[in-house]
Amino acid sequence: MTDFYGIKKTDQIREWLHKFESLGLISINKSDIYGQYGKFNRCSYQLDTEHYVLITNKLYDEPISKELKGFLILLKCKCLNGTNTTLYSQNRLAEELGLAKGTVSKYINEAEEKGYVKRNKKGIRLLREDIFLKTSESPLAIIKNVYPEIITDEDLARGYVV
Image 1 (spheres, rainbow, N blue to C red):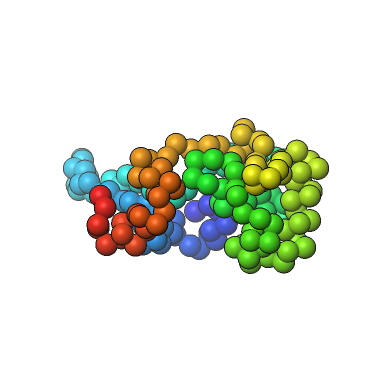
Image 2: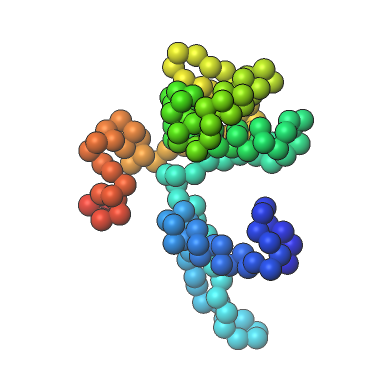
């Protein structure tokens, strides 16, 4: 078995898929397939359409440090759903990401110098849409962004909203 982006060769991809399923990040649908050699299961996988980001593999080839690449990925994860913009201040980002304020400042400055981000009064915006893809939001996600106090993740988990 080959490496799968950080998963050791001895780990099974199936185990990770089930971990992702237990976290609500994907759903796994199994169907029975009958063939010449008997019955087997075929699985299909569906991503959670609300809580995910898309980053192309172009990021791997960018001429920047792996630390800056990692920071940019973390920054994308803190963007508003379906956008490349975060409204967090640098201090709040440091808190959210578990990094020192100086570290966040250093990476944002470096990313801005190299053309990956732009700061303004409204927040921090990732500029490279060829790397940091925008996703479309579900109607429920849009409502949650507009009225976060009305519909919460807990409401969804309890089945109050379908």
